[in-house]
Image (tube, rainbow, N blue to C red):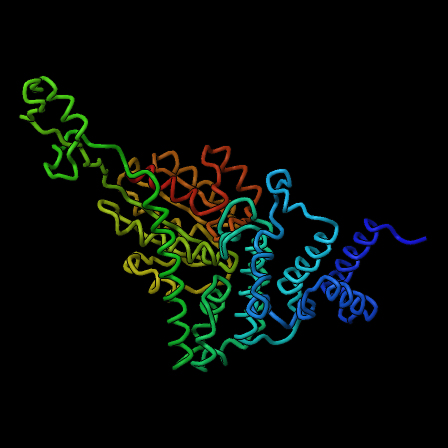
Length: 441
């Protein structure tokens, strides 16, 4: 008895996914699965290179441009009623399974052993196609809300690739170093290894850090500008310039000057909009845990502190700590210099940082203290947090300020801080930006 078309399509689709699973979790090829998959791909009119993990998705699309559109939104959730063409036939579902397998295999089967700069660059390109398949722009999946777990997986895989790369050798070769693109994982490794670099390797490392800092700063600066910027201060007379002219109010106030005979409105007074905003001089104290588990926070908050330091009437102080505390305030305007002065890793003792931070509180009601940590710390520190909060300082504990929003916080501290009325901010850095702008402007 012959197999029905529906069952045949489902069988072929399952075979492609079994082949994918064997490649992801096994070390040896399964000849029967491989040969059957080749036959299916050939029958679908797809190139055999689709099954080869050594061929990047970028290369595949360059050779077969028509596949580029098929990879877009391939795995995105979509209601077939909204786009009936997307629902497809059984044959289309088999084709989709083949394309999905390619994306998953290239991104999640990273093998073992040494990694070259070219390997890392190719993986990043494949990861970008994976994000397109998920319905995101490249980089958006790891920076937007709602995909924290998947974003953490991608970040972890990238970090593993960077660790397996002979980074010092790559940095010492200008041609190889140019193939590197900055990422949080790469910057972490550079910061950890900077004391062992010199000459050309150190210069290339600094260039990558500087480039990454500038790129992140541009994104964060945009987020700061998009948030609220304070209330209009009507005690300040409006500037009498054309861009502030209130056309509607001017017409309304001069309606009594309308001349029926001339059919004209004679304006004898102009009205302007108030644009001055009230700003209160404020002190912002940023304390960052620089232990090994808080690299993203260190990078992001260092850059964020420099942006707020550029705002008028905001006095920014920056402290970093592990078992010792370091006052980085003299370099707060230049996050690149701050990062070069930090030492990642080691233990955690927030009491050392609090000893430096408390003397900086001159006017509690006009001070905000941001404490960024995973809070796996000395339990006695909660007494200092309570003291600072009671004094009138706006205390903002932050459990994570990373690109993916993924975070881990000591449950004991999470509950204690919630009971204090200062719950830990978790998730994307936008939440911290919003809190700070509301207080400072």
